[in-house]
Image (cartoon, rainbow, N blue to C red; front, side, top):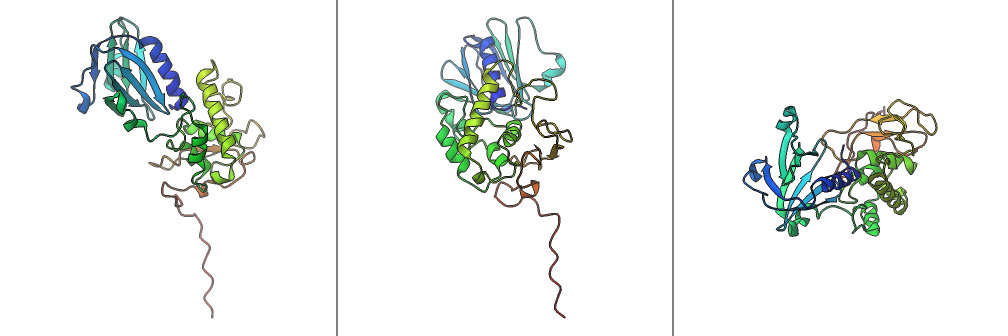
Length: 292
């Protein structure tokens, strides 16, 4: 699943294959963009903000894409093309003068805007530690603004701090030793933001460190809790637990946690986007008996 570090690495890979190239054929396979043509423009760079990718072209034009859960970009060498079975998933084709071709697959969000207007698409996002304009203090302020919001839900809110997806939200909860449903007001938010920024940068920029949170890349040992349901905690041996996501609720994604290493409220403390309990308690205290 793409997260901020995933998209940052993707942007650098696309730059290596496409930056400075002239587009000789473009095909934007979305109805509202189908008549737009990027042929003749030079691909200048790929920029990112959180999970958003901005492909910038000469003439002050930017192609914005969001990978969501299943989107991807790939580049084929000159004379090569994607397998036929993948072609129905293609939403963007950008062929360069050198023969390399970029394909955007399963892109659910796609926009073509003036580069000067990019903020209309990403201006709502919080600070991103992988950008040069990273603002630590602003990220702390936004995350701490609603002290009752559960820790994991606050980290998943891209308007507070951009780039943290579900894997990082789960792993950071473990690393700070709190359950995912601990109110963020009970956490040292300044220390949390420093840890999150360091983790994203390490993952995106250090070879071999991509999304390794334990310090070892051995299969099955690269994450503290994510994906480890019913397996022993790598730190204490307690069985790791998992609670499914609430459908169509981005604040309540699938959570893994170690009940021993991460004390605090359980999933019954989940709240929805309005701040109310996400589901009623499974048991109710019976009413007192009527007086006789």
